[in-house]
Length: 416
Image 1 (cartoon, rainbow, N blue to C red):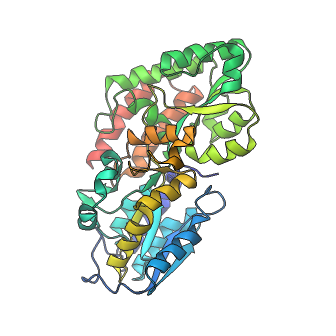
Image 2 (cartoon, rainbow, N blue to C red):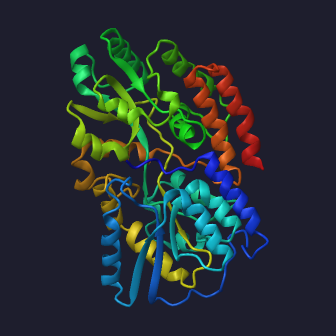
Image 3 (cartoon, one colour):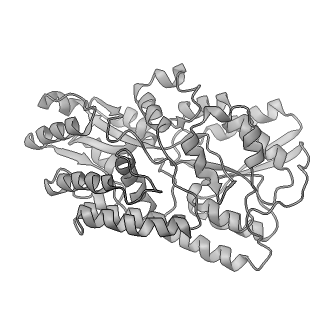
């Protein structure tokens, strides 16, 4: 099962400790440019990734990408090297301290600031600015690759969340697929009366909770830079009403259970991600779909950040691989075939997307979505938002307290 690929607070804390320890051991800092020239455009190119069996349809493409690039560039030997997800950040930072990183690193966005601090990834703003297809990617998403005014990462495809609906239940209770929150609540009320659980989401602490909270907030006018927006209380008060009416699953605050809950056929709606499409197509025995409803028509972008290793001797070749493999039109098609959401606008209208109404729904959400700001305090921002969301769903605080905590804690973290 492909998760949002966001880092939890424990992982970020470990990375921070490691990067600080290595700072005095040749680790560099601030995305230092090592070895001024672009290096050779031939020879071995090493790509670190964390695609395993839990990565949905992306893992099989590793071999495809390797063979395709080598065919087009016969003097290059591409080597994809697997690094376990929970070891990626520490390995990249350790390698930078030792003076050697992979040429291309596919990583989770929350780790990039610490990698920059350790000199483990390079600035790529000039290359991105010259990329001819730059305008085909959502600006608000690509802003997530910028740290303190400099670009260190780009994103080609995404993991995002939407609202899944159980069409079989809706037909039984005489409810239409909702298009806005009022219609959603009306259907949830009917589902509850019929003995179903109306909704399931996920509210773990940290980045996992942030990933689930932000779509509701952002769709109602909230933003990271306007964390005290009055709309936040309005939004969270609505969610509290659902909680108080017992319209949410009792296990929502304990982890990522929404997908498993939805497969039981007893839930009318679930907040889940595109990474579940393959599993649901294979396993669900009832009619279902995805709806980009008003009030949840934005999402927080997850998925892999594409970076160039800070100690690579072949930065031009590394960028060429990123551009030709992931950022290309074919790369967008690959992502769609794997069940990920392509960010290139010219892929959204192609058959690979439009033939799948559910993937198409996720693509529409992605076009309006946002990336979390890349700041040194990324982990603490996640803790503030995810922690408030967790306690709200668990019933330990009310909506006003959750909104106040976010409003008070997030702005100083963005400023530091």
